[in-house]
Image 1 (cartoon, rainbow, N blue to C red):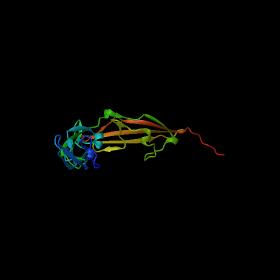
Image 2: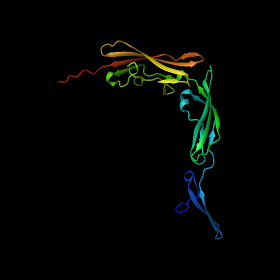
Image 3: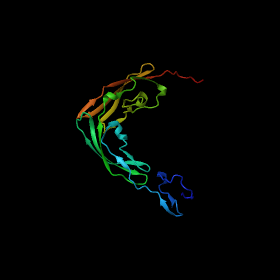
Image 4: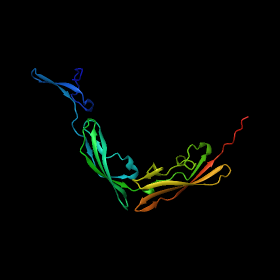
Length: 231
């Protein structure tokens, strides 16, 4: 029975009943005998967490959610307790190996056994690098963002992507990659300003600089709106 004395239709409890108290009654089917008691629903079982060694792309490592966990009665939350990185010098495939220690906790505060997982972090693959449009034309009135040099911001002219993710600004110790650009500004001709933006993407690997294929972007800033005279 619930707190109002109404019989529960199925005689079952679930995660939504944790912390609640109910009265139950047992009756004999053949003789007029019954007994009752008050029960409180609790969750005493620990969640289960599964740690398996895995491989993760270095760009995805910062948002890596960790191993899967589940609970018999509610939600399970994974917590990272510790991580020990090991740099893999001159490895052709991986940049680091990280020993990660996790634990899971459920809604009732029960904790799982601690588990360890080894994550190998893959090197960047420049073959998956995609550059923005090679020529960008901007109307001067539409430029609403500038970099430190006073030129149009990269967010307006386009940013290189790797595995579909923008990589500027980017200086990631996991990937050992730096991404920079430099601009050469030509003298203004008539109403047009031309800028050549050169992107440089470098991976530090085995005490060497591994450079991606250079990319030069042509940025044209035009002015097609004439002045207005107010009388």
